[in-house]
Structures are given as C-alpha cells and as structure tokens.
Length: 66
Image 1 (cartoon, rainbow, N blue to C red):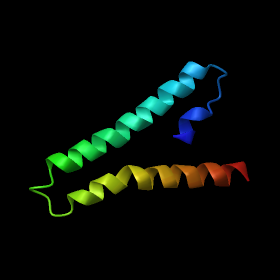
Image 2: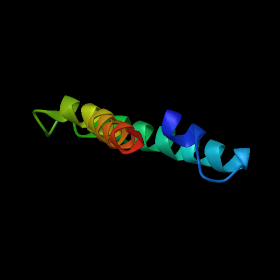
Image 3: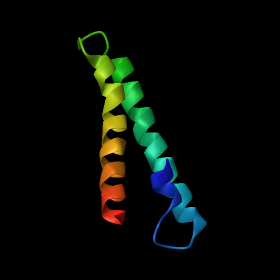
C-alpha cells in the first residue's frame, strides 16, 4: 500500500484512490484463487501473484531512487 501514499500530485484523494485500487487488486486475486481452488491444483499460488508484483515494483522504485 505504500505505492498509493506517494504520488506526484499533492492531492490526498489521488493517494487514497491508488491505495484503494491496490487493495482491490489484492482482494480480486484472493477471490479468484478461492473460486478456482477446486479445478486448479496450484490455486494458492494466485494469492502470491500480487505480492510478487508489489515486490517487483518496490524494487524498481528503490533502484530508481538510488
């Protein structure tokens, strides 16, 4: 969620909106994993997709700051 806290604009509503979109993305991935857990043997891996994406984006942002 820290991705949504800092935006280029000074408006707090933009940061809140980005944070809510990130939460929605995580929530949708968890619901999708719950729906397909019967038909897909590795459905639990879908819960880790948003985490991996967030870690990758965070690493890129930290690298860009240095």
